Amino acid sequence: MSDRVFEASLTSLAALVFACIVAGVSLAVVGMRWVNLDTPVLIFLTVVVGLAVLISGGGILLYLWGKSYISRS
Image (cartoon, rainbow, N blue to C red; front, side, top):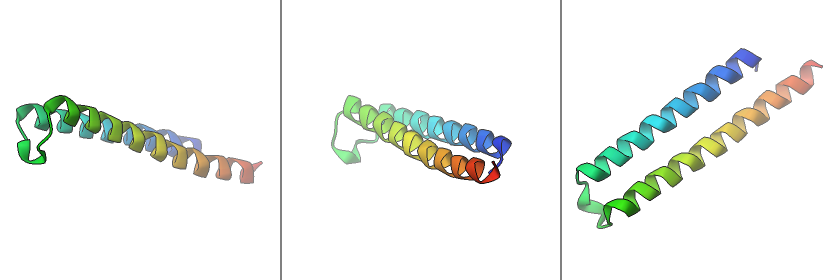
């Protein structure tokens, strides 16, 4: 994986996670009550899951990039 591909992948992952967090928060605020939880709890869970996906996805991308970088040198 080249440096440019890693940069684009990580940027795309961050943008996707940010869009999902914004969509989840807006749905929680608008009134998605089928979960039977309060709005702050839904917002908190949305942000926590989004950050977990960003950290784990970023870690996987960093691992693959590092593996490729070591094999080049």
